[in-house]
Image (cartoon, rainbow, N blue to C red; front, top):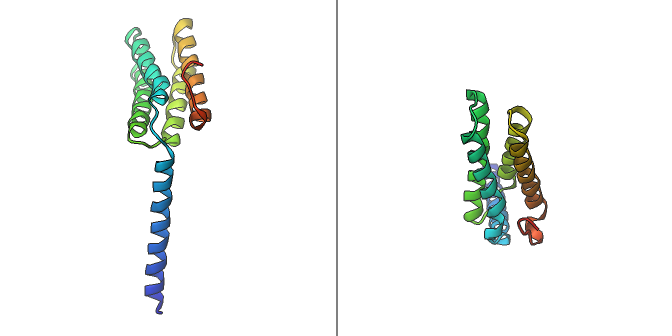
Length: 133
């Protein structure tokens, strides 16, 4: 067997293994609408808090970024993929809003609760996560 044919077959086998692994992972996750609840609640809270305050461009951009990443996670979730990377980015973005944006105590408490729920979802999604329990 010549080298080119060997490399081509090996690359093909590796590609098939990666695609097969992703398919198995996708089959292992079964969409659960309960998993969307903390994401939807966080997006809603971010919108409400952002609407009731006046922010600079950078402060508003933090809200938009958080909502975008959480929305992307929710879309992937609905398609049957629990995209931990997108969820991690969304959690980091909400934490960034908390750390860098001015807000009143009530808004801060709401977003802190949302971050706790998102982290709990990330930690227990495969163990029967229930929102607010």
